[in-house]
Image 1 (spheres, helix red, strand yellow):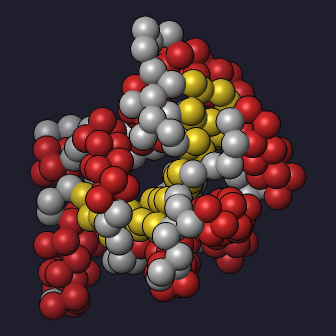
Image 2 (cartoon, helix red, strand yellow):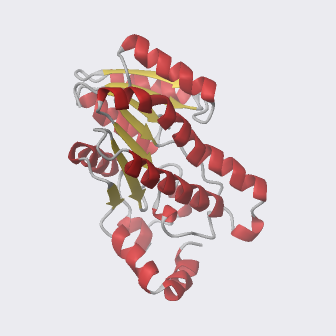
Length: 256
């Protein structure tokens, strides 16, 4: 990762923060973005305080805003050159039941969780194609393969992101540019922890942001197409595919 110029959206907390930390430790030049300036500033300062590593800067803004995207691209280019690793991690999850969800909430989730990744991808892709190298990582969710009534807008938007990444992977065949789709299960973050009770099965199966970030960066190095993490995610999805009615019955009791 030494020569990488990496952009991590949603880089102030959770998985994004840990990805930025590990990239910095590996010598990458990292730009983290998000909506909350103070959190980004604190994260960047704490990462930069480590004795050895690469470089890190932050820029606050909305990852779905074209003007913000262009500003990030310009800043990274002026400092370090073209972005060679894009990690679309920014997301929001308005958690309530499907029947309590308004149509406009789907539109907002789609903008935050899918269109932001589409716009950033279109911004950095031309330079990657010209150089015939680079990686784009789109972080979906297990709920991007198995719809959930408790976070319907999140699930629908993550399905869309997974579909975009599949189309992108097909388009990039033979180009030298790599696209990775990530499907995390329960990862212990500030966004997910309030919805999972301690000492429950889901709590025990949950993984740290550190392990998730390591798995993502390892998958980038190996140029994997898809990453399902932790180990149980593929088995849960097989259960849903093979026995959908039974799986949905079980999910109603586990997810609420």
